[in-house]
Length: 545
Image (cartoon, rainbow, N blue to C red; front, side, top):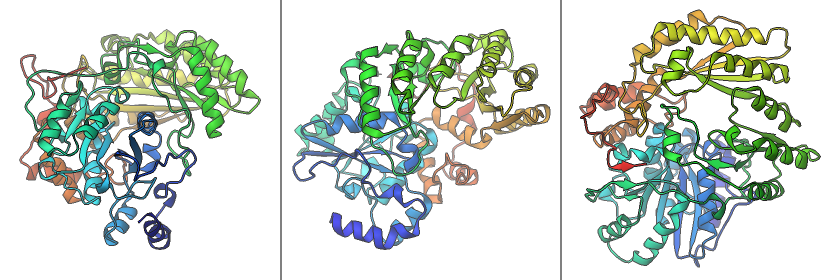
């Protein structure tokens, strides 16, 4: 079957699609286990394009854990670009895994990693391309499971998924696969009952009165880490080796869902990290090593770790980078020093333009600290600075919007006379995500978002600054599904049938389809954005993070 499938792809399908390397498999460090000799087969899918999915560290960790087991194998599948989807449908070819080119319908389980609400239609599109019924009620096999940040409110897609795993995947993926192994001859209803006994597992088809408690890895140092990750054939979003130095965040930003999901703070030992870094570079050939966490500069003695790795790899022209940098001269100069091979850009996140609003949202930064951090960056020779702000935060006024303009202009003034500096101000719409202190707050409408964006465009006209903003309609949709209930499953299916795909990609996002889908499903999407009173039961109340 694999030989026939490969010939069909190489001769008929792949020559006619863009970036065919998305669909071939066979990359360096791919793990291809013996299909016939392995008891349990799971296909891991990030429901977005190859470039996005291959950049996801969580899926890479699960892939490594499963393939290191003695009874299970994991293969991969990502969402196809529209030209590939058309080729598969026209040729009546089911979507397949990259490792063995096996149709997804032949796997025992399919696990989706859901990190963004705008990937929901991609998930059910992958199922349909595999010839698998999208409704859990109409499906006997394979078992469909989902994990990731979006599953802390699983209700909007509960009709499509057999079981959700709440928490960190490496803590229970083997429990789930072993439960399947021991009960795979039983009917689906009995099998789901067995899955529901696993801590952290939610089965939508079964009534469950008690709370579902998230599971966490207590000791990161004791868990498998992918020091031999797959190296993609084409450039991906994060085209570098990623070394997770800690998990969780010591900060207390009230808008941040990631902090809620990944707490408590857990730190990897330096000796462990140094060994993992050496193995990753040896096994991949990457020219950049990124020290990953929600707040990398808060790692204890991160300067010592960074300098040691920078010194170790400098002779091989391997750069060390920090994806998140505090706005102080120590952090800025450290980022510059450890990135000595290639000058880094830095990302600074004031979030709000005024001190009043920064204090309200728990962003512990003064304007003096922000400006001194930016000044330190320019003095250190750093040429690229990205600034992150949010609009629509609770209690925001026009004065707060003006604060974004004023603060950005002050930062740009610090760069005056510096050659080739680039300042980008990115503005996102605040979304009151579940399990945050702001989960009951109102989200502003599309019209309000556009009005605030217009204000910034009209008032921030500095040629030294590039202003970027999130699509107002996409942010609206993200907010609807972040705080939605099970009724939204109908809208997801309807929008998908109308052609909604790759909604996180601006060139493919069609809000008119979603408007029609909501109307046909008799749903008022704006009702999900309203302020929730303290007595109102939330759809995600039964999930405890």
